[in-house]
Every structure is written in C-alpha cells, then in structure tokens.
Amino acid sequence: MPGSPSIADAPVGSNENANITPNVPAPRQSAPSSGPARVLGVIPARWGSTRFPGKPLHRIAGKALVHHVWERCCECRQLDEVVVATDDERIAEVVREFGGQAVMTRADHVSGTDRIAEVIRKKPACSHVINIQGDEPLISPALIGRLARALKKDAELPMVTAANPLAAGAPEIDDPNVVKVVIDRNGRALYFSRSVIPHRRNGTEPDLVFYRHKGIYGFRRDFLLRFVRWKPSMLERVEGLEQLRAMENGAEIRVLLTDDDSPGVDTPEQAAILDRILAS
Image (cartoon, rainbow, N blue to C red):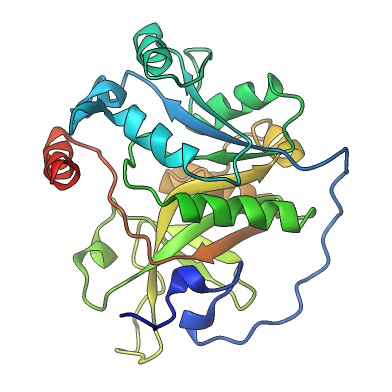
C-alpha cells in the first residue's frame, strides 16, 4: 500500500514485524581485516539436476534461466563482480555468449557452497561472497544489496541470509519442501527446518509469524573457507540443510526480513508459469 512501510524498508537485521525487542548482541570473535571490502556475487549452475536436467539453460521468455538471474544480479550496485560457477561447458558457453563471466569448477562438488568456495579461492581480492540461487529469475536486486551491506557494515558477521513471512494458513507452512526458520530477538537464526516451526501446541498465538527461508546466503571469505572444511553435521544430515552445519559449529547466521517472495524454478511446470509472468 503506498506510503506504508514494508519489511524490505526495515533496517538491516530488523525484526520489527516479529513484535520482538532487540537486545545487545553477544560478543563475537573479530574477523581479520585486509583492505577494503569487495563483494563477489556467485550464481552456481550445474547441468545435472535430478528433477530438471539442463535447468540453467531452459529458456524462459526468450532467455536462458541463468541469464535472467545474472541480469538481476548485475542490477545490484553492491556487488563488485558477478560470476556464474559451473562444471558444464555448455552452460559456460551460453554465459559467455550473453556477456557474462563463467568460472569453471570441479564436477564432484557435493553442494553449491563447495562450488562457491572453489570460486572465491580463485578471487583473492574478494572479502565477501553472496550465493545467489541460479533458479530464481525474479530475485530482488535490492535484497542482494541488503545482504552485501550487512556483511560490509559488520566485519565480525560470518554469515547472512533472508526470510519472508508466510500468510496465516498458507500451504507452504506445512510443506516439507519449504524451509522454515525461527529467529531470535537480535535477528539471528535459532533453527531451520522442513517441519513446521514453531510447533503450535497451544493453538493460535496472535503474534506468531512463520518465516520461509530464502535460499540466498552471504559469507565472509574466511568463514566460508572454514565452513567447507567442516564435516556435514548430524542435524544437517537429518534435515538435508547445509546451514545447520554452521549453527552446530556455533556460528551466527543473521536473517534479514524481506517481503520478496519470488518463486524459484524446480520443475518444468514452474518454469512454464514463470515464462508467462516474464513474457507478460
């Protein structure tokens, strides 16, 4: 509604829509400083998706899916450089054709985070990295910028992500394919789960808001390189969620609230829906 404040307008780390009062953050270890902050945006793109092989090159509204994501990233002025990380020459060739920068990576990475870590090792000037999912053609450039600013503003912050509120009664609340997050009074993640969290044992709580985790992450360089050396943790294996590895090792994950609920592309049917949206 015009003139009304939105979640996206909230200050970095704000939880104003959760009806909670911020407290003084707990002390953290300082990160080493080595020159000005430089933020790298990385779009992981692999060919071998189980449900949707070749997804990054699937054409939506006349362009490859990865092209849409790259254009959104390039609209973000907080990113000093944008690259597509891939292990497939077909994807790299298309990226170069539309004027993007492709970085070839190993084919045996277990996750996109491992792929991003390989890229940042090749970019020694970059102090921070934002992992932008390669299947979100409507990702908000403003949201990407908020993550980058949060990292640059707080040199001690190891990791940042985002979440959007779900409407009361939304089917996503009970959908195990939709990851939920619970946030503390300082805007830090308490837990991520595919289950409904928090559990509504005592019926309806008027101030209760469910938050959907968005799959965008920002990392401080040294933390990311440490993270990928840790073995997958127990909760990570149980839930199938990488971010729980960071939490089980005591790392803070700041959660930025946003009203960006842009959908991703997991299936050809979802791609068809977005094709109609972007072509209109």
